[in-house]
Length: 219
Image (tube, rainbow, N blue to C red; front, side, top):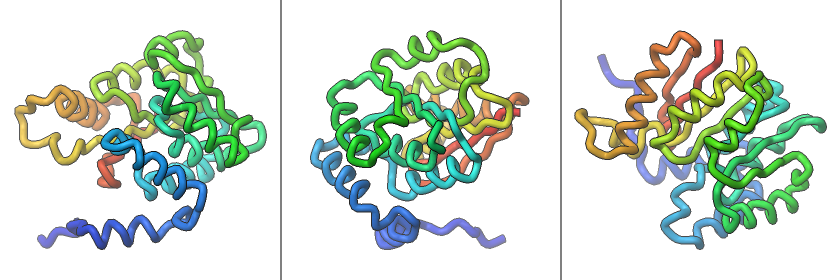
């Protein structure tokens, strides 16, 4: 049977990045450029189509209280916070004051500073300090890959039933194959992908969006 999966050339990737509702957003474009100027570390920023997809999910699901683990320079936080209702609040967890200072600058310019609560420090400790009750209705995780499973287990009881959790980099540049895997990040990501596929507490789907998004819904 012929494959329906399309190999992505550079020109096709550029086409995808231009064909979404945020593609002409000057603020997001400026933030991307300033982040790129940071050098190799800029690879941690999500892609434009991922940002647009997150915004679409937040709006479609009527999310009011999302949490983000791994904020970097704030691009994903803008995409998560902009569609929130007036009373909505995004909690951002990160460990870098330098990168989140840049994020704050753009959040203020985007007019969403009052919708974002930023907590600096170790993400696991920050989550553990939150009461174990369903306070959140969406989670985006894009931080230390070897700790993804820990974030999942800590966040699940703090998410309301039906809430969605999205993990980034779940194809890890294709290095989740072949097995056996040597790289710790690849091993952790592969283990979580397989765990989510058979975990009866959630339903999940792994999508080849940029470096891979695993999307799961709490049952």
